[in-house]
Length: 151
Image (cartoon, rainbow, N blue to C red; front, side, top):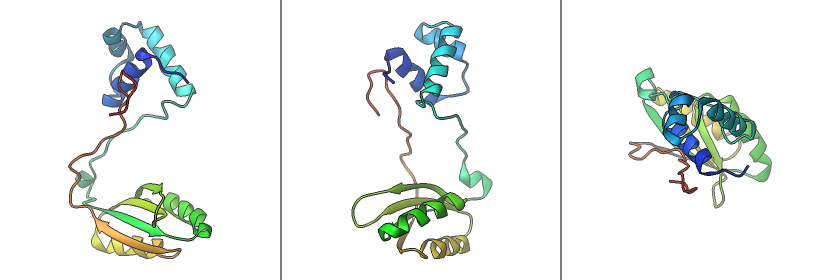
């Protein structure tokens, strides 16, 4: 889908706050509420907007540790790992990468003993290297700017 400037402004506004009304966004960018609704529906239908969600403060719900786990495996281990990631609630995200590692996985863990269980489960199909996250001073999602660049 080719995005025009108004589409990019809509995406930028929704990424900043998806709870704001479409009418309010439309007013700021010069579109009526029906035109806004139609554009958002088209963005959803085209798969540009994949969904809406809440950002949860993990510490506030008792999950105080995060770990970055690098995984090395063989080609045959890739599919089992993907299934394992999907089945483990501790896995927040998993990226298949190039280089010595095959995956980089971010996990959320409530207690240190939970980390042991997660690492043991992940080590079944390959080598793992684990690092605890001390802090996350910069946390971004891709923001589509009106000019068409990512920031």
